[in-house]
Length: 347
Ligand SMILES: C[S@@+](CC[C@H](N)C(=O)[O-])C[C@H]1O[C@@H](n2cnc3c(N)ncnc32)[C@H](O)[C@@H]1O
Image (cartoon, rainbow, N blue to C red; front, side, top):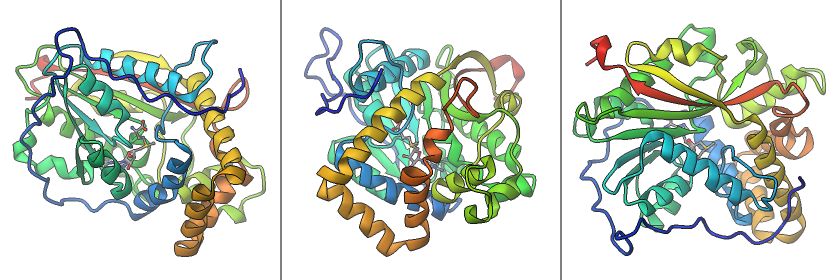
């Protein structure tokens, strides 16, 4: 199936019968106090990625496509509905937290189901967009929630859709902090969940590597690696996006004792198709969207090293697409459903 370039329908926001026109009250939550500074490279990456918003790209994770789909957003909406069903957001009043909420598509869909949806996000550009849409979104590092007492126990479910890949940096891996960061993330999510919610769940989607990648490859400048090599792609990806991927099974070990893995689904094909749609729109935008070109040029002018790496990575060496290509792609996108482990005495 090839991407079809056309103007995008907005995500449908029909409410359950009887809920039409009703808007759920926002949750009363203060801005979390700063605890861990956001990684500057990750923040800057989303300043660069904001260029894509100029061509209507506001969904930055995987999709779930059917053969008759002709647009990116159809596959995105199907994937988001899957995540909402998995987390149990199927009744009005459900209190949902999304970590790394992007431009807020999932929060909007949850609100359409009658949920009280809250997002945290470290990208100021995206937070501004979300707030303009009337969404309840806080600009902070999710790690600030660890000490946010008023947030504890306030949610029935939590989703992290494509944000986890940014939580660990190669320096953390080199210095042996990787598992501790994942363990802390599960502890934070556990704290956010209301202990009285039956069957409370956490749903994640994350790119995984087949085998652990040496952090030195990512810490070495990409232009020092041979062109076309895996090491060069990994270095390009990190030096644009700021992040590191887990290996299969790693998150499950780090989730204990707070969560048990209750479902795993492979979304690799859906990610590849979503990327194909995005790439087609981004290529076309180079010729048709002055706003896209202006934002890319501004990124290069203001942050030359990262801006050039972004262009090299995305448009020239196509490292983002490389991740999901071939019959046995180097990465897999795994969707995980985690259920609170009440018996483990983790409360
Ligand atoms: C790949 S985008 C996915 C966005 C959105 N979930 C979607 O599907 O379009 C990753 C998101 O996670 C956010 N993010 C990354 N690290 C974060 C952190 N430590 N705390 C809060 N947000 C973070 C980014 O700003 C971005 O919005």
